[in-house]
Amino acid sequence: MISKNRKLQISCDGGAATGKSTGAKLIANKFKLKFLSSGLLYRYAGYVLIKYKPKKRIFFLKQKFSKLKYKNLNKMNLYTPEISQYSSIIAKNYKIRKILKNFQIKFATKNKNCCIEGRDISTKILPKSDVKFYFRCNLNIAALRRYKELKKKDKKINLKDVKKALRIRNNHDTKRKNSPLLKHRDAIEIDTGKLNKKAMLKKMTKHVNLTIGNKYGI
Ligand code: C5P
Image (cartoon, rainbow, N blue to C red; front, side, top):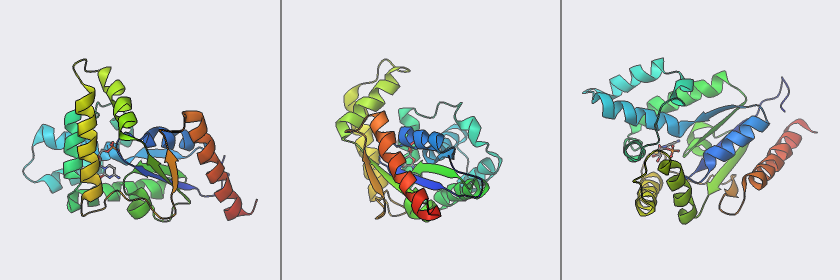
């Protein structure tokens, strides 16, 4: 737990379906930090652009995000293959990234003790975060994981397509010009293909405790 006058910010980055959301949620819960998945913001932006097809996309998104209550995103189904793919296309757009960056910065300013996960959190959104994690996972394992989640809602889904979609999305995210997915030099690597949830949380907790110890001298 983090006491009142201490500040703790954690950033988590990684490729698609690497388990970064699970890891980030576990560590946020353990240290009572407010949690934000920035991927959900990109998915929401993709969703509203597909749904409303606005002519003035930037103006429209600015309005949508000024009214957005993050909590409501969890109730929406934003993990469809269509939204996944489209969100990674619009994520290349500098102006769209700027709107979502503002939303994330406001969140981190309001919630001093927070954990945000995404692609550019350690490099662009919270470069001063106390602990940085970088999630990795073998593509076959990541694909199987995402396939099992999607299969619950869509019986026709097949593993080969899921794997291909993840590969394409990771390519978009690592090769784009604006804020590509990068491993920050201070980031601690978490390989979720090799660690189960318990071992992952243990490793993350160890690093967070070390940081708190160094920062506050305990
Ligand atoms: O993390 P998730 O897979 O839900 O993210 C969906 C997409 O949103 C990613 O493929 C990526 O293109 C984009 N994204 C991003 N920067 C972030 C988080 C997500 O570009 N910080």
